[in-house]
Image 1 (cartoon, rainbow, N blue to C red):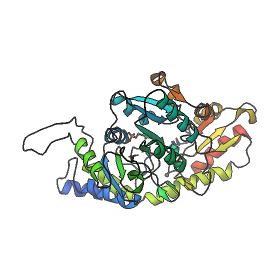
Image 2 (cartoon, rainbow, N blue to C red):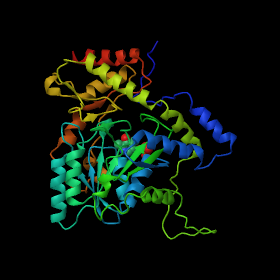
Image 3 (cartoon, protein in one colour):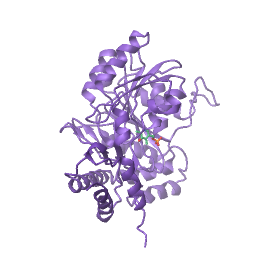
Image 4 (cartoon, helix red, strand yellow):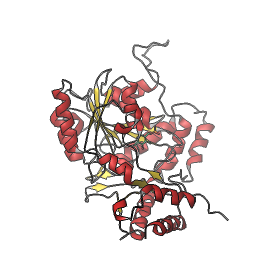
Length: 395
Ligand SMILES: *Cc1c(COP(=O)(O)O)cnc(C)c1O
């Protein structure tokens, strides 16, 4: 009998989701607002702390799009964006007619390199334009080097938009990812650490950090950013009895039904983080000492990753020429799904003309890297199957 398929990252239902959905049906709240939406937003606020304000939306991509609008990104503006990421980080820049400028990663966290960021900003300014925003990603749950990045952003008075789509539950110096930028996007897509089947949220942290950016953060410390996000996400309707619009709006609000799934998922979020981290520990323990494998690793105790996806690099110079692709195909032959690390945006055909500042780190990560099955739903038996194939190939 063929082994059942092991997936990279599947949804993992907690058990109480249907109670919240049932409440929505029982009360006719089958609309893009209502008690589950507000309840889910409250749950997130409570979890994130740090004065976070949250607007639940239809996707993480929608959150990034609205985030850029709230940071006043306009056609022909430039936006700096981590190149080593998923396309959804960069696409909303183009939705607005603005121009992505890609910045490479550093080796420790695989996220935005402070060194290349500084160089990129100085060069863009020298070429005549101060970038309007910086999109920083916490790749696979690993927090970026936020102190260094924040210092640079503040020095140049450029606001930070965090793509924390995969980093719910990760922290930097004890502060939640998603509350480290002026604005942040979360995702509850089906493959994320918790899911609403599809959904996202925009987070505004209207406290000390945001307020330092004088003149850049359009509104401060009064909840107006999130109020504005809700307004834009519901078709930008002015206060009038008829439909009246003085701005372009969007239909981005989360439905009260899927928000019910989110409320159920929030009850198990701490468990899900623990499970993903335990998977990561399992792989580290059982793959320890194998020549040529290295893990994406927290550089020190300031960094706490939810380890959404356990990710490794295979160095063919140390594995007698075995590449990540050899390994991926061997896993596939054993009915196990794995995936190469993101192909950096500056190497994507659609972004070929965009400026890039870097040294090839993201490209090297792509060439050598593989995401291993990491779902919280995996059993120890599943993990053992994955480890066995890796050892067959590399030991
Ligand atoms: C999933 C993801 C997104 C997109 O979120 P959606 O909810 O699917 O729109 C954006 N950026 C990163 C890094 C992601 O992992």
